[in-house]
Length: 206
Image (cartoon, rainbow, N blue to C red; front, top):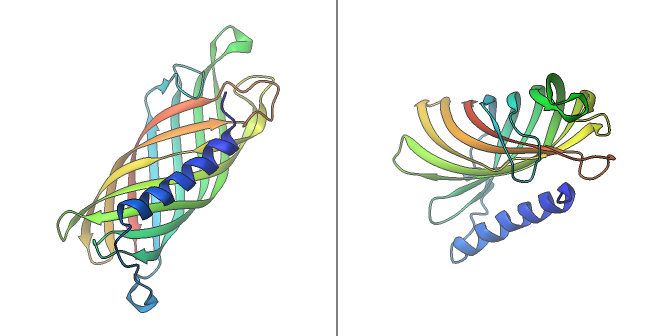
């Protein structure tokens, strides 16, 4: 299993470097008066199944709810905007086959915080835009997870893509896909991890 901490740091660095490379000739707007005001968001996601990629636990159903904000931190001449994001995750739930119990299905619930993330957004029309995001979280589960030799403390990594529609001047609706990896980053005796394919819905308030 890949060390989650290394994977997360490398992925965040890659996104920032890619952004600067793609927009490398663009002038970064330094006048903070032109930045949008702080925006708040409420989002939820559902994954019908897990995949065998970084995580090694199959056939898992996942649910998640998040509350947070996004702050506009950079403008580019191309029209793209970069945001810093942070979220509280009051609820996450997994229904998964537990290898310690003959792959019988168990439920595990948890909560956490996503202290750092970045979102790159670009307009398609005045009302529609697309965004690419990446963030990392700390999750505390209600028991050792997803095996008896795992840990209650786990870490997540979740790149996502979304389409965003302005409903009015103060409210936007986002629909997208989020690849969500959770594991204990090799800090437990076992680290099978789970990779969820979340379809998510997000409401953005100014």
